[in-house]
Every structure is written in C-alpha cells, then in structure tokens.
Length: 325
Image 1 (cartoon, rainbow, N blue to C red):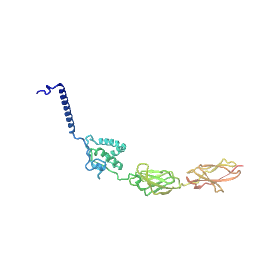
Image 2: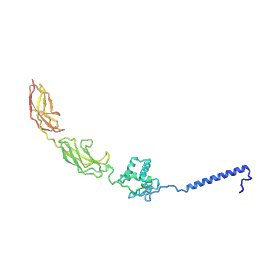
Image 3: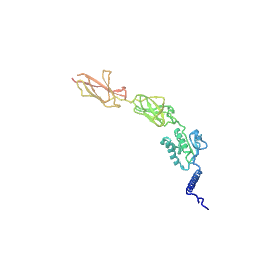
Image 4: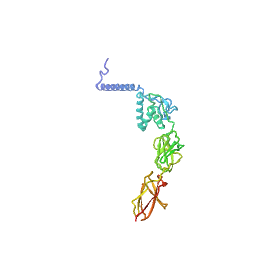
C-alpha cells in the first residue's frame, strides 16, 4: 500500500501526524470510559415493607407491627453478625449516638433480649444505617411491656408492721409491678432509713417506747424513686427496766458527796432527794452531789429511764448519809 504522506511538503506532514495522534488518543479515552460504565453501580436496597421516608429506617419489616425481619443488607462485605454489629456501632457513633449505649442495645438485640424504648430506637437506627438486619437471622425486636419511667410507678400499698422491738421495726408491703427496688422512710429523717429489693425491710436504730411513722416508695434503677405510700405509725416496745442496786455514798464532805450504783441498761438515770419533787439526770452510774449543807442528813434514790426519754422505771431504795461539819 502506498504511503499517503509521500510527496507532501514537510510542514503539511507534521499537521497530519499531529491530528492522527490526537484522534487515536480520543478513541482510546472513549473506549476506556465505555468499558467502565458498563459495570452497574453497587446499591443498597431497602426492604419492601418499610418506607424510609416515613419511618427513617431501612430494612425488612422495620417499623411494622411484628418488629421482625430477615436481612435485606445487600452488601457482600457484611457476612457475619459480628461484622454487622461492629459496622453498625461505628456508623451510629459517627452519627452522634453514644457508643456504649449502642453496643449495649445491639448486644441485647442480637441475643434476643427484651429492649426498652430507647434501645428499640437504637436498633432501628442501626438497621436503617446498615440497610437491613444482620445476615444470620431472622431477628425479632422484643420490646419490654413494663414501666421504664420511675414517675409512672404507683405508690406501694398494704404497708404494715409485722414485728416491733425496743430498737427495731419489721415492715412489709405489697409488690409494685415493674419495680426493682424499694426504700423506707420515716418521719423526722432526711434520708431513707432502709432499702430493699424485696417487699420487706427492717428498720433499726430506733428508741424504745417511741412512736414512728414509716413510708415506702418503689423505684427502678438509679436514685430516683416513685411516690411514697400512705404512712403507718408504730410504737417500739419499751425496755423492761429494773431498779438500780448497790447504791452507796462516798467522799462525803461539808457540802458535797459522791453517789454511785450498779449500772443497768440502757445507762441513763434519774436521781432525786427525799422530800423534794425535783429530779436530776445522769448518763453514768455515778454522780457528784454538790450544794449541800454541812451537818445535814440527806437521802437519795436512783431509777433507770427509757432510752431517749425521761420516763423512769422502778426507783431504788434510799441511801442515807450526813455531811460533815
């Protein structure tokens, strides 16, 4: 074949060659472009029964009445539930969700546990972010039917005292549905005086022979409690007091003397002088008598009192002595 460039001037040959090379380059670029565009783009399909624009969630049966579904995730990269879990945590965390809350909710979801309202939101957001349920399903979103807001718990009923001592009171009450803990309160106390995960509790540290009013409240996890019950008033039993013994006088002076006796429970006492209606207190089994008159005869007796009160038990016999000149 004859060379078409033969006989052309040199300058014209250069123009023809330049145009030919440009044409070949353009043809090569178009071929490469067409070859790549022949591959269909990778897409993530949504489930057929959930409209993302309506629910904000992509995935089979998400937002449906049954809350169940198989995976509609078409990504071949997600081949196990562990991969789905890790990727979902990352995507929601990047979207502003709390990673710890997401991990907890998805972990409970994958193990078939019941979820509260917030955990259900997280699971549905994860299904939406991942384009479907985990690959190894089917899965069910189990929602808890119980109360999750402590303010919605009712006050316990049936509060009553089942036993009383001089320092303790045993209380029982009816259970409150969905409650996981209870706290007992009493009149005059700033904080709760007992706690329980059951429907009974013992309150200790009380004073004998004294009346107290108790209340109980139910709660979920945390410090907040629901409303308090109607109060129940209980009187602790009084200690059986006996008359002190061993009363004697020592260190007798002109205007003073030392009075001692054998200790008795609970260690609080009143003492008085014969012929006088006045009484004095002592927290020890001894006291110093002062303000006495010289060369005067005196008689004293002692009684134990209930803890936290001035109610005396039986009085001891009198002890008599005479002050010095």
